[in-house]
Image 1 (cartoon, rainbow, N blue to C red):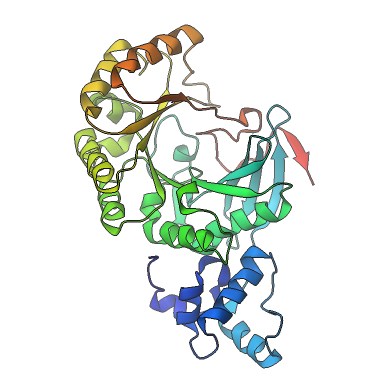
Image 2: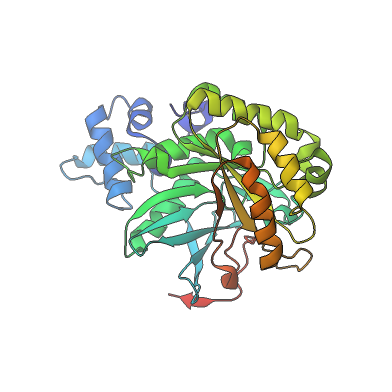
Length: 356
């Protein structure tokens, strides 16, 4: 279940987009029963209306609801489409002037997945990530996360069938907001995105992984690994200093055991840094006995400090990784020409085909 509304939320107008029908009804039991709440959520999220005027709701009810709830929006600064692969990067401006990005990802010419941001900036400082170089500004509220998807969905020419929390920020450092947003998006009255089609990614916030496991959420978990040893990972991902790789893998093992799910491990491949035979050996020892899906993602560094491995280095690394005995996938990271690929989001507006 999503976290309960805070006391602060109950003394100011609440954004509909961040609520499940159950939470909406609980916030206004004198105005809505559960069926009314489902209709209101469907009116705003499923049908995309920006008002509270549900058909057959009286004017008095709509006015009373308006005193407690609203349907805020995010300003779309621009949309940039990659002419290479059709990825579209959205630049949004928030009410406080901060900016975030989300990416519309085409799949099989039949549907879209949306990569959403969960924070403005990021505190983790992974050296290969543009967002990490921004520093941390603030968490996004649940509605600000859901509204990214709602906005993109309203403009899409095919259905949005999945969401990945892999945009700006560390999702599990905004745990309450991310879980609330995921439940709001997955509700059948709302955007109706299957829970198994929502992936929450983390750089390794171990206490939050354990909490996620204990609470038994049905959303998928992905963990950014990027190295097989403490020393190498610490140089690339400063979070390693707080939660060492052995502790991280213990939490991943516990999650896999508790859920029976194959855990997605994301590995940013960097030429000459983490793609050697010694890296594969370290990974095999570290991951033994865990059911995983190993995603290889070639680094995208607009600053030019890091380069992706060439074809020969990557092929040799993939061959060495066969010792894992687990699925190894070279994950396509699209939208590079519009700065929309993994690790490139930094709320910028240059490059690509500008859409209306």
